[in-house]
Image (tube, rainbow, N blue to C red):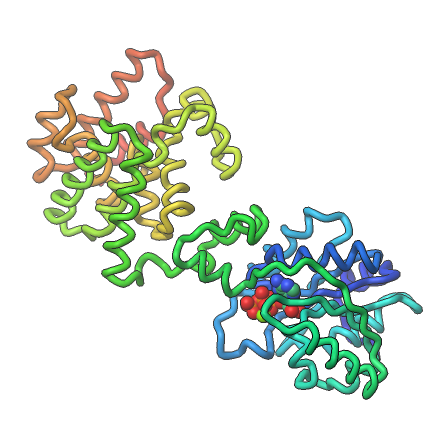
Length: 416
Ligand code: ATP
Ligand code: MG
């Protein structure tokens, strides 16, 4: 009986005349995978190189593996760069541990009669092939394309190939793919400590992993020493990136946010981070702000399109996530709306917004004196004064006013 597959997978396989299959955990897919696929495609010239992300890896049971949905999406994104690369979900849709033999049976059953199917395998994986499920059947019925993997002896692999060919009659082809010393393990390690992964994985894959918080220890469980070290590191980065006056302002906002957070019994750590990063994107040129909005899929409504500087909170939050490893939604939200406010402000949001006005190094402006006086007794009233003055200033300058400011004002007036 043919193994059951979804209709879309059956229809796809039905059109495969010759495929080189690359199975893997792809957690995440990296340029090493793509380079071997490319080399195989150039040398063997299969119609397609088919990437098969595994559902449940049998050999990584003690290890935490990212959700199949994420590994699938990242692999699919990487396929877009090469017309001959494609992806199938056949292992993801199969319950239980993913075994290559089951995939081999499914492909043999669903590809057209006479289709050439071979499995790409690195020398690291080849070393353990005799331990795979139904290894004898696999070796007797399938063909393999072997590629070298840095750190694994190619001569030893070739001896194993000869011996398996003798014992099982297996067809092996050797492809001298470029040896890129990249592994998913190393990519994950770099993500976790915030090191760049440029050149190791495609940009779209990096973007996906960052947006979905993969491979990074969540902010809430950073060890205290890590937290402190990262805070100082981030401060040093901003000292370089920002103008002296903006950096001084940032230090002032941190001091004020700490004071307010302590008074209002809000998480001081989160207040410090939001304060530190609130203007991280403020001094980017308007060109770069526009480009980043496009790249990071920040939608520009009518007001933001005209007053691009208003996006600096939204961009600051994205930069906090991507460049400073902050995945805490409360911190990100406080950064996002620190200039305009919004309709459901938390106490942390209010603290950052107020600290931005009342920090000790800010020169006298509008109702600042009153706002400072009210800061510990009536934070809503202090913010009402600030928001009204900001709206008036924008009106005087003939700048459009974002509705978020009006929403904030309405809520603050209700005492919320
Ligand atoms: P991890 O570090 O999590 O084990 P990985 O980098 O080894 O991940 P897998 O998804 O386990 O990647 O690998 C799938 C297949 O790709 C295996 O056959 C492996 O041998 C091969 N492969 C992976 N990276 C390379 C590389 N840099 N060079 C050659 N082959 C590779
Ligand atoms: Mg591996």
